Every structure is written in structure tokens, then in C-alpha cells.
Image (cartoon, rainbow, N blue to C red; front, side, top):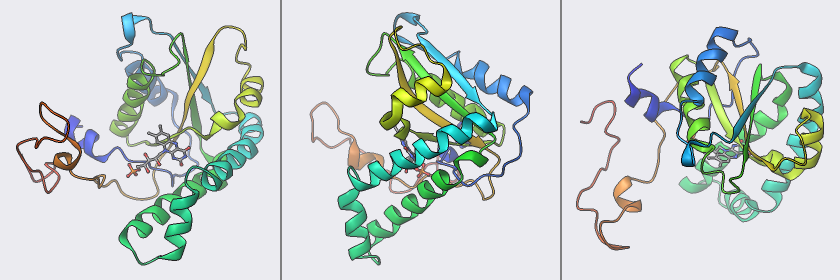
Length: 220
Ligand SMILES: Cc1cc2nc3c(=O)[nH]c(=O)nc-3n(C[C@H](O)[C@H](O)[C@H](O)COP(=O)(O)O)c2cc1C
């Protein structure tokens, strides 16, 4: 696959089939992930695949509770605003994300594969996320959809116990990635255009060009 296609179409692909991800596909995803950079090449990461129904059954209720906490606190204002004015474009975008995130939570146990990513000696997680994103891009190249999730943060202690993660070696939880073959189609991620979120030389200064439409697949 063309790298630009992967970059433009690796979305939060939450609606997926329960079909298993073959081990050779899993190998290619993980082997790509561990090629990623880390500060000082410390490679202070661990990637834990979960495909056991018993373990997923233990984690699912924690995930749902964590997502409830997120939507009841961090995103509460956006959720309330979207319900108050459902026809606004921003509300529609938010509710689309909300419904999709709820689908993931409701169907947590049906994902054929989950990846729990941990890092050591790097509380920022900055050395973990290039590897995680490489895993997501590698999955995209295999036709496998992914979604990055962080809500297990709210149940870190229980999650460490369920997964047998050592509590005394300085491991921090980074994120959970869901994997599965999509039920829908891949599309280009709509975002605020680059020229509205980028500057040149000084904060607030014009970047010097405008990109009103995505440059892939039709642009240069
Ligand atoms: C750091 C991080 C944490 C995220 N946590 C969650 C999460 O807990 N649950 C979830 O459903 N999606 C989560 N997402 C996915 C975002 O909601 C998603 O990337 C965003 O809505 C853009 O989606 P799109 O690429 O399909 O447009 C997270 C993404 C990132 C980068």
C-alpha cells in the first residue's frame, strides 16, 4: 500500500467483525511496531496482545466504566452541547464519535485482538507512541482496522492485575489498541486544515500557504 494512503485513511475504525486476525498478520504488525524510534533507542516498551475470551470478559466491564467516566467528566460539556443543539455541524461530528466510541465499549469482548502498550522510564509516553502508531499503520496496510483508546487508565490497577503486569518495575500504561476487519469502508480523516493549526517562525504567524482540501488522493 502507498504510504500516503495509509497516512490519510488510518482512522478510528471501531466497527469491526469478530473474525480472527491471523498470526502472520499479527507478526507483521508487531515487527513493524518495534522498528519505531524511542528516546536513546531505549525501546522501553512492552506490547501485550489479548485474544483470550476470558481475559476480554474481565476487562470489558472496566472499559465500559472508564468510558462512562470520560463522557461524564472530560467530554461532559461537549456531550451536553451536542444534545442541546443536535443540528449544529460540531454536534453531529461529536455524536458520530460518541456513538462509535459507545459501539466499541458495548462490543469490547467481540474484538478479535487487543493490544495493550506499556512503557518504562518515560512517564510522557513519547517513546511509546511512535511504535503504537506504526502498529496501527501496519494494520491498515493489512486491511485491519484499529482504534486507539486510553480509558483503561481509569482502572489501571485492576487491569495490571488481570494482565499480570508487574507493579514494581516502573511500567506505565500507554493505551489499548483494538484490531479487527472493518464492516465499513476506509475514508480520509476530516480535520481542521493544516494552515489553521500551524505557524511559521513565530506563534500565530501565517504558515505561508493554504491547504483547503486534503492533498491525497486528488492533490499533489
Ligand atoms: C491518545 C488518544 C486516546 C484515545 N482514547 C480513546 C478512547 O478511550 N476511546 C475511544 O473510543 N477512542 C479513543 N481515541 C480515538 C479518538 O476518538 C479518534 O482518534 C478521533 O475521534 C479521530 O477519529 P477519526 O480518525 O476516525 O476521525 C483516542 C485517540 C487518541 C489519539
